Length: 219
Ligand code: GRF
Image (cartoon, rainbow, N blue to C red; front, side, top):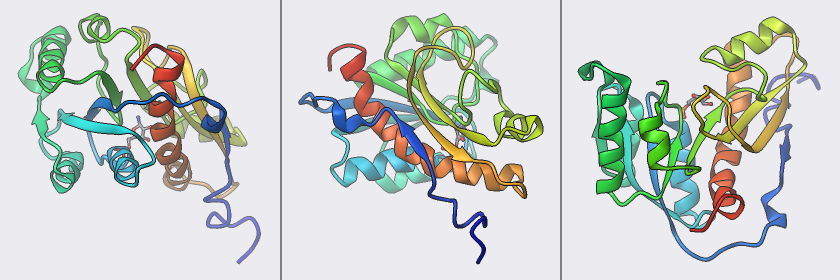
């Protein structure tokens, strides 16, 4: 196998910041996770909690697509999953109102958008100010939007990555908590690059969940 093969570089990354330099607070984070699809990031969080690497509890998964595999994963981990299908709501604000209600019912303190493919409104953002994290598959502020990996490849960047940031009204903006960079290889396709990025997403999302309360308010 050559040195430049995709397999060789699956684990090459630069992650910043390193959470080891922060002083840990005691307490268990009460998380609500929002996902639209596969839910591999949900799984990464659940696994880190199970391993004792992240002091948190997933109170509820909210998903918007009836066939989202994230719901299957939630069942496996014994996490309640609530389907809020956006197609049943006339306005984004109405959906967000139901999301807020559900998060409150389950006692959620921090919200994690882990592959939530809908724009959110001030109804949700104002209900959890500085308490909503998002994971995005690019080194923001480059390549915002839903085709970030394809856009990075099309632009010919040589380094790609992922970002965990706090949500604000503007899409894929808001204070950056943590980023991981990975190499782009000459023979990459959107699928191979995304797979390399996802390895790092699964590392930085749980770490950023631990770091965000230290940086942005108390537990
Ligand atoms: C991730 O690439 C994330 O960055 C983006 O959507 C994808 C979700 O993946 N926002 P998964 O559903 O967690 O596997």
